[in-house]
Image 1 (cartoon, rainbow, N blue to C red):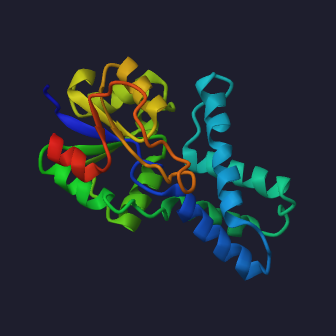
Image 2 (cartoon, rainbow, N blue to C red):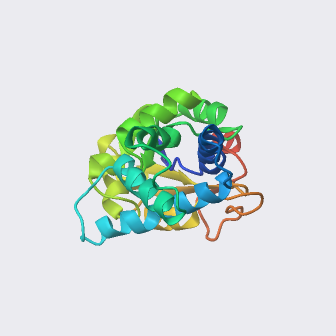
Length: 232
């Protein structure tokens, strides 16, 4: 098997979105004297993620960067929870930066660095370039390139996102490895012609609520990015 680069899903695979968003919201609620479940809020905010992107994938709306979708979704969740008037527009913009302050999983930084010693490592995320740069700087993630939705003007699992990310590195799809903790992401990547690596993240959605087992015969199935680096 010839692999020219590793492309990474980021939210859930490389960083812990749930605890990161919950931490920012808990601090914001405390500053306002609001008694509110920050983890439940994070879950609901994330729950608007796929429907918002779905409208773009279905052609009902043109491409909008994820930063803007996140802000729209924040407004929706605040209003639904009766908190729409609790934060000013400027404060909501600051809260939206929560998605740039997500802690990497314990093996992510060292695992990516180990993989980079063997091949280029780049994002293939639905996050915008700006968002990915913010996350990289916050968490010390060392990417060779920021690729994914914004260069393709579309959202995974649209096959063009995977193919254009590989193409940006002058690779055929079959020479790129998609690394993700989500079986559906890998299924779409395989359909687009990429190689696949599943990494277990059992606590992504709360203790034991993430995806911990491969659901197909992916090219690799590992417990950590460090294990993947050793096997490449």
